[in-house]
Image 1 (cartoon, one colour):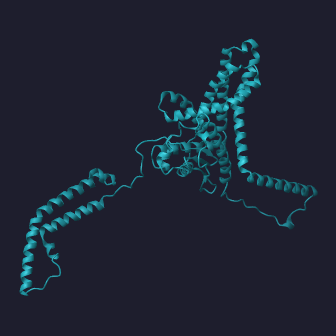
Image 2 (image 1 turned 180 degrees about the vertical axis):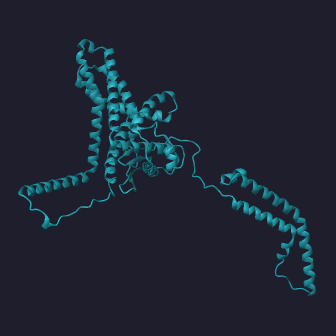
Image 3 (image 1 turned 180 degrees about the horizontal axis):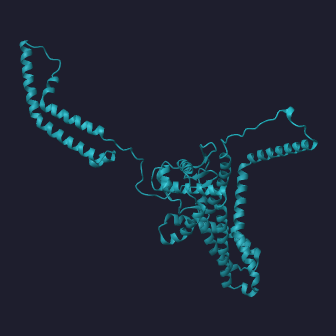
Length: 444
């Protein structure tokens, strides 16, 4: 009983008082039972004799006569004390159901402009803080089923990454529009026509040009809205191409430039090829770190990193089984082992190994061949990196996996910032929109 009552939120002292009162009540009833039975029997005989002799009418009730029995009075007092003890015990507010064990979830997201996109096993949603302070939440249509290639190891990583890139690009552009909704309109003062100065011929021409440009822009916007899917894919491809040029091809171009200082005979040696590929990897890491450091200094990007931190903290709170409140989320860590930043760094490490092996067999004398080889190997690098991320995320306590995870966690000092409570509220809204009904459906 003790454990059951405490589970209902009663204090320990109240539970003990109730138990003691219950035991006293039970003893009193047992002791009073013989006396009550004898008293009732005698009263019944007297009433029967009076009724049969016609000296007394049949009483409407004999229950009132039992109220004067001392044993009954004592039992009633004990019962009232018990009820009062239960009513005075102030139960604590029932806590939300908490999982008994921390889990690793596949729920993950992407920071947007004043918002977050969150992806669950069945739903994808965006939550954006509008200019008027409200939170806009919208579910994004998601493919009902996975294709065969999305389940094939090494291949699925590239497909999922590109899909995520397209969806994330669309969500980023939409969040920019939504975040400006609800802003107070500026007061525009209009000058009366009679007070305006007459326009010159040049001013009239300028107005016509401006009107023509506005008309052309509206036609372009209409065309873009009509072909929105194609535009999103184009934007995603453009972003991916920029990343490949900056982080894959440019480091190799730097190495090929350095090759001019070596003779043709030495440039074919395996040792030199391996050394140059490690130098290429160091150049790639340097460019990557400089890129993150530069973008983190931009004001708008800094707020995106804060939303990135809110996303990580909210997922950590959800994985810990805690109720999703601002207070609970705030105390969680903003560093998460299963993050896109960790994936990017794994890509850098894997590219060093893959390109090194390729250079040993192909050679490095022709620069454009090196470029084509790296372009062809990008899907393989991405596929291997995705499988390593999945494995490390599932076994993040393994010492070997920690080696791959550690650089990504360190880089999150640049790509995440401590969020405000307002940002945490947006992150909570995005996570709640994609949590599956069955908690086992999103296990990593």
